Length: 399
Image (cartoon, rainbow, N blue to C red):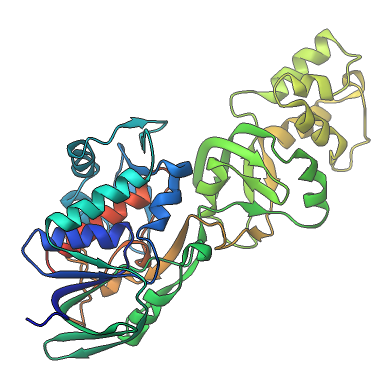
């Protein structure tokens, strides 16, 4: 075998690509990982505030979105969160559970990168950076990969180039182009796990609340999430909003409970009975941050009722409208903050084109797609990394 000939070439040196290299190399396959970046796994480095939420204890197929929700089952069973935790423990990386099963490094996300690179070295997998792909050609015995460092050949080619999210980290649509080159269907992509934005009067009304946070419950259709919500200069963010953004589509509304542990109507009725001369801001401030209570009162839509300022003058219908503005706030975002800060890309290579067991393209033997480039997107909380580990491992067992 020549110096530029390998059993497996992996395009992309992120989490999925490195895991695939480890998996394939562990089977005795010669592996080359190619990446255009100067450093490997940059998304791992910046994730989790620099501490990498590397998996989730509660990972199940229900934590993933796809045109085919069952596609992820095989890979997730083949390499579980507990398998990855075992690797982390074997490398003596200290970690902790933050909330909701989310596991983070105690020290630095670089611990995970170093672990993956050490695993690659241990199985002889070569990682080559600063390499740009100029073209891919298929032939009877595999693939030729033309780069600015020369031509490399392989029997199996694995595409692990990720999605469009966070282009400043080097993200591109390269993987989708490879899929289309080989006549594979690509599901329309859009930013996911991303803040939602307002426009016009709505943005002006809530912009002063930038930095205010509450524990909220967000509904979009039949889907809901209960976590923190953060007001921003542009709209809404926080874990609950990032989660629901994967389900929200442009033009749709979301329903927000800004005080999910409080019955605002019951509270207002009680205060009206005890202190009828009070206004609305103080009672709401018992439940909400004062600045938020003030904005809700100032921008209150009385829906045809005569505006009132005191509880004594408020009918039950007035109080219900105020309560709904808190417990059932109907709001229509204008959009998202886009791929610029989206944590992941939803959509991608159609799972109908791939084997769920091997991640191999059904009509292009030897061609594999793994990780974010595939139409499988996890919830916030370590699930997307687990998909990288699981899908990468699966492909590496067959490539």
